[in-house]
Structure formats: C-alpha cells, structure tokens
Amino acid sequence: MNPKKKSDIRKKIVCTVINDLTTDQRMHRICGSLTDAGYQVTLIGRQLPSSQKLSTKNFQQVRLKCIWNKGFLFYFEYNLRLTIWMIFHQVDIINAIDLDTIAPAWLVSKIKKVKTVYDAHEWFPYCPEIVNRPSVHKFWLEMEEIFLPKMDAIYTVSQSIANEFSKLYRREIGLVRNMPKIQSIDKTIQEKYILYQGALNVGRGLEQLIDAMQDIDMELWIAGEGDLENDLKQKVNHQNLSHKVKFLGKIDPEKLWYYTENAWIGVNLLQNLGLNYYYSLANKFFDYVQAEIPQITMNFPEYQKMNQEFEVAILINDLNKDEIIKSVLKLNNDLDFYNHFKSQSLQAKVKWNWDIEKKTLIDIYERL
Image (tube, rainbow, N blue to C red):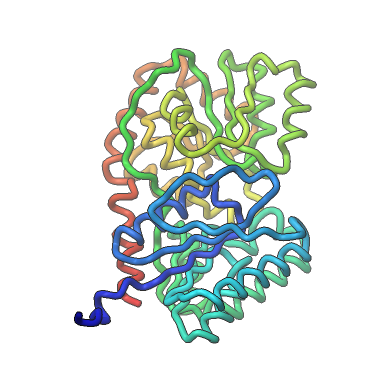
C-alpha cells in the first residue's frame, strides 16, 4: 500500500475563541468553509455553566472548562488551558481570534514551528469596555504591537480597520467581512415589529431605542443577552412599555433567522464610543439585507460605503430617540420609500453573501 503523498494530507487548523461557540455564526461559517476546502478544523472555546448543547457541525468543536469565569484569573486560566491543549494535539495552522487568544497561539506556533493567522473580529483595544480604562487600553495596545507583526497572515472584518492595521504595521491585511450565506425568505409572522439582534451591551443604542418606543405604534423585539439586560428590562418596566418591548433572550442562529426574516425593520445603532464601533461593519447589517428588510443604522464610514453601492439603510447622524422615531415613521408611513430599501436589499443580497466572501478567506489560507 502506497503511503499518502504530502499533498494528500489534510492540514489541521485550530481556531481559538473565548466564547462558548453556541452563537458564533462568523466562526461557524469560517470553520465550515475551511473544512469544505479540505482542511481539518477544530474550533476551541469555553464551557460556561449556562452553555447550551452544541449543534453538530462538519468541524470539531472543543470547549474548555475553567474554574474561574471572569476577571484576570479567568483569562490566565483559559490561556493556560488553551496552550496545553494545543501543545498535546497536532496542528499545522493556528487561527487566533482577537487579542485575548493571541498569546497562546503565538507561543504554541513557536514551540511547534507552525503558522499563525490573526482574525480581528473587532479592533480590540478600542472596544467601549476597554478604551476608557487607560491601563487596560494600554495593555491591549501593547499586546497588539507585540504580536501582530509576528503573525503569518492577518485579516479583519472591515476595510477601515484593515487600513488602520496596514498603516500601523506596514503589511498586507486581508478583508473577510461578516456576511451570511444567501437566504430564502419565508414570512410567517403576521405582526409588524422592529428587530434588534445582538449583544445587550454598552453603546448599542438600546436605551435610546426603548425611549423612542413611547412614540412608535409598533413592537420592538430584542434578541440577545449581555451586561445591560437587567437594566434594560427595568427601563422598560419603568416606562410601562412591557406591552411593546419583548426580550427574546439568547437564541440559536437557526431560530434567530426566523425572527429576522419576519421583521418589518431592523436596527443597528451604535454610539461612537471609540474606533471599534466607528469602524464597525456588523453581521446584523448583512443579516437584515439577506432578510430583505429596511434597516436603520449609523452614518459611519463602512455603512456609508455599503450604502453607496446599494441603498439598503437609512443612515442617521445622531443617536437619539427623535432621529429613530423620524426614521421609523418614514418607513411606516411611506410604502414607496419602504419598498425602495427592500428592493435594494434584494439586489444586494446576491452580491453581499458568504458564498462570495469565503473565496477571500480560503485564498488567505492557501497562500500560507
């Protein structure tokens, strides 16, 4: 029996994240596409007390259980466990997702003499939770400055972040945007509602959105969880809006699509709390396009650029309830105006989808 040729051996890619894998649609797409391209892929995340059972994928999923689940001790323990796992398993390429897993990825790559790829889901030091804490911000900036020049390849989610990285580190930066697979529409919910999907964290415009609901004759459905969840629920109760605002909680991606495709309007509202938000190009933006629903989002650089190609969103300059109310009422009261954004989304979804975007991803790995 002839031994396998080197070209026949499937290279093993390990992707490292710090979430529990359940709803990480970007990594599900990336790992699935790399597997389809002929790689053996393992996605590693964390096991939380509240973690749901993982759905079956065409790639391996591993969750590491930690004693601590927050703070410095958690980061130290998780990175240690991640390092040990990778040392004792075969790997040819390590894909570090964001700065919080980049150190063990680089360390193991040196020990095993393998390639490392950095996938910046966001500009980590400029996240709202970090940018206003000087010592923490400085630490993550230093981590970025130390490790990004050492990576064999880097890609990120928006052209604006790619441009900044390219200027800072004088190297080529790939662009792999957060586009979903092309979707068909099957609307079954009869009522009109506004949909927010995503994390319930600081700077997501949720407080202003709830304030606006006082003057909007529709329901708001909020899908997701996060640090502000209890505060937002209290705000809804305090304003007697419980009949208008529904909290759907954490939802698996398949069920989330059911709510997205049936929505009347999607919202993607951010405060300019740092360059990470200002340069963002959120996956929900493309999800709303695939659902063929008009959306209201911020007049930030990436959304301006996308809207110039296909006008799929109302872009607002100021995040306040009056701007939100005006945009919702315009979409509600002017059907021709509403249908313009709907038809633009129908055209955009054919171009802005994962089947096209994944070609860039696979090319990055092939060039390694």
